[in-house]
Amino acid sequence: MPAADAFAPSLWVVVAVFAAAAGVIALAGVRLARVADGLAEATGLGETLMGAVFVGASTSLPGVVTSVAAAWAGHPVLAISNAIGGIAAQTAFLGIADIAYRRVNLEHAAASVTNLMQGALLMALLAAPLVIAGLPPVTFGGVNPASGALVLFYLFGLRLMWSARAQPMWAPRRTRETQVEAEGPPAARRRSLLRPWAAFAALALVTALSGYAVAWAGIGLVGRTPLSETAVGGILTAVATSLPELVTAVAAVRRGALNLAVGDILGGNAFDVLFLAFADAAWRGGSLYHQIAGRNLFILALALLMTAILLMGLLSRQKRSFGGIGFESVLVLVLYAIGAAVLVAG
Image 1 (cartoon, rainbow, N blue to C red):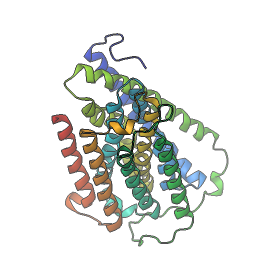
Image 2 (cartoon, helix red, strand yellow):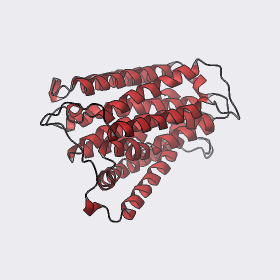
Image 3 (cartoon, one colour):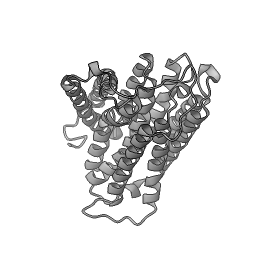
Image 4 (cartoon, rainbow, N blue to C red):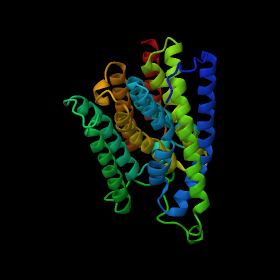
């Protein structure tokens, strides 16, 4: 990836590229939600697992490309803040999706053992970089071996979610508002899935390429504005590359695909932690985890706190609170606003 000043573009050019890339990411996310919802029903994977694995990972592609490109260009702080800042932003997006779903609190209606498992997995994955940062900065070929362990733990978590859905040991109490997923695909939907899978792959590729543009523009903004790498990564690039999650969640909620909306956010957040592993492989300066300090520690703690509150909301299943949404939605939105203000201020 070329350095931000290779062609000495003006601030307005950098801003234009950033805005255009963010727009493409948002538009592709709308279509991605529709394709994924259809595939969830047709394949029998279910909305929760479809959101966690396919939608969550694919809508995270802009973010992973941004973090990897920033790390490769020698900006580890930007890479870290983009990864963790995206998790905080996407958790706040669930609060926005809750507002869009006026019937009842979203976390009440979308309660499932799979979503709870995802929340617990996400908290464990968020805690892992803190543990790794406290270990000796050992690397092999410039890569911390803990990066591989992080990926393996993520895959183990997906296996646990699959088992929990296939053979649940307990289930949330059903109410009139609880959404129940179908167990398998209707026979009429078992025909050809080639076209929807091709469309899914094409949209994922578009969002990934747009993420590269966001990384280029983000580095340019660091050099041309008073904002620090942590502020640019934790707010601007994080929100821009997370737009698919916002669009997907709101669009899914409006179509009644509630588990897809929650699964997309939680699954995307769990996958986003792996940005650190990928960026660690791209950065040539040693262990990326040992660059987690200062405001990046603050963002990581904030993401952990917001996830814990969200998990409490999924467990308590409050129907309504302030403004017709759950207490967890109110708190995560307030916390994210406070966090963004702290990053901009300092």
